Amino acid sequence: MKLSYWQKRLCSSGIDEDQLATRVLREGMFFGINVFTICFAFTPQRLAAGFILANSGYVATSGAELDPEQPSLAILGIRILTVGAPRLAVLACLAGSRLHGPRLARLRQDRLALAAAGPVAGP
Figure 1 (cartoon, rainbow, N blue to C red):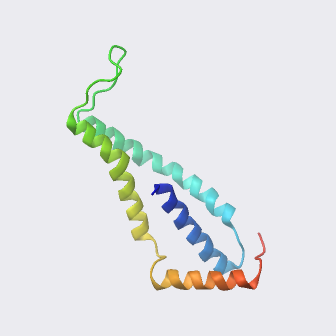
Figure 2: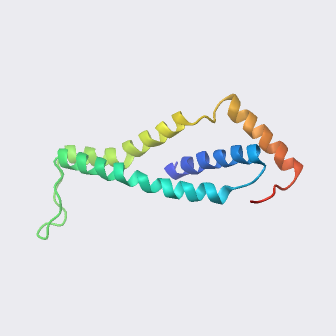
Figure 3: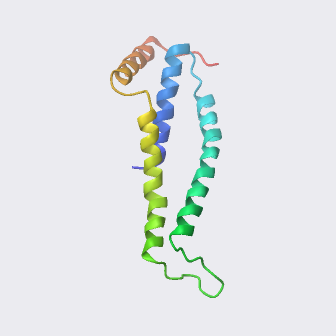
């Protein structure tokens, strides 16, 4: 399953919770803030890539050799960057989410009741 699925799912749950609290649907604002905060994820991502590649023996390409053979530790580092680090980030976000258990069940029930009541005014 794509990692962006969980990101959008968490954002949508926040939108639903805000709509129930304010009776105003402000989803555009939430996705705009989401895009803005994603920019801050690039810094730790680049720092992690630099650290892992530098310490794993990664061999950069050169003009003479476009596909140099990589040591097994470098391959492991690349796998960690592409699979391990994003999954850890998603798990940290899910663990930090307050929307689970009874609170999530109550949110879903209230959201269904609000949908049955009719359309909600925009901003």
